[in-house]
Image (cartoon, rainbow, N blue to C red; front, side, top):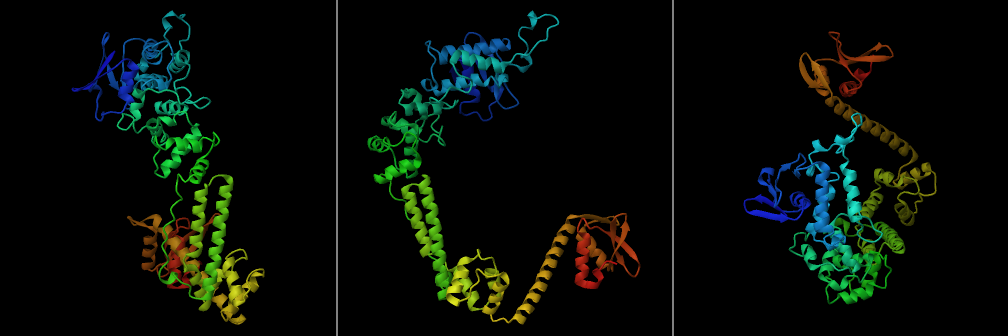
Length: 521
């Protein structure tokens, strides 16, 4: 028996040293600011055991003995008092959570051996009996603890399988949950830790949300397969419907005929067909207001109808495909149909009105942006234009398509050529402005030193131009060029660099002042 004092008014007892480690490092409790010197551990027969804090923040004990003897003693205690108290190996759900945490703490010693053994003492325990010239090998605590767990308990340090054929797991609540699901007896004193107000009432709240239901409703235990039970609890929980002792028999009768590996969708369909769960609430809909609430012309109304019909068909097709794959329940499918109908019948007129106004106002720039595209783009806008205005823009060469857009806006071929030329010039100016902005940003990111003054590249170029430097020149240097900005009156030059943006920024600034000055000599 070990007595653990963690303060002047808090004293607890544990039957094993592994239980002491679990208390200090694994069990929840008021430990903020707890220091090693505040903890006292004493065995009722062997006396005090030193406690220290590791660099990782965990607490460690230092019982007397060599590493193998210490680990053997800890495992002997766990086997005798916890796992095999009456000759039979207990499974995790047959022992309390506190007891299992002691087993888990013992298994941790395979990796975190320094929680019980001074790492400086982990050496070859048989070194004294070795030949003088034999090579001493260190004691492998990992292999020793793993081997002892398998030899004594039949499973490794990560715990046994939580269900036949399932994976291993070291969490006590997982073993308890699946034992209840199989209908195996679990003592109330063990379940109390997971009941409301228990020490571990929050355990498994993310992945074992069905555990509290099994504890509260015993008639569910052993009645359904794991898939059936988890899906049932998930559906009821999603709809905020409680499973009680009163409705459990009916729910079991509805779910039990389903396949043992049934899905959430299968259970949802069964409960929906039996009217246990209601249809999903219709979505809240906010009608469009202002200019987007009504069409500005028959063309806008027609385009709105075509867009709505297309979106409705696409959404229904996706829902039908998901339903056929079994990933969408019947009531979710009905909900999707309702959403599709609302989207079709009550969608905004923003885009149809914008397009219709561009047609009415003969806004050439907008119409070219919307319609001068390949035949598989903006198909509905092109279709409504054909229906309402008789202008065919699909299935024709790009030049003919563009010409018809100009004709729609009343442009002759000569006016089209003039407009294209002006648009090309405007585009070139926009690109130049973007290039100048990028050059300015790059220049600002560079650093220059002029006569002991630190500045960025933009400030450097602006200073040079402000002092009368007006011409950009270059000199060959091998296969490259070195660029300068020159003051014509004094023939003074200052360096520019292409890589940091100062050359491009200087060219852009001089082009603003006088385009001819930006031409390199």
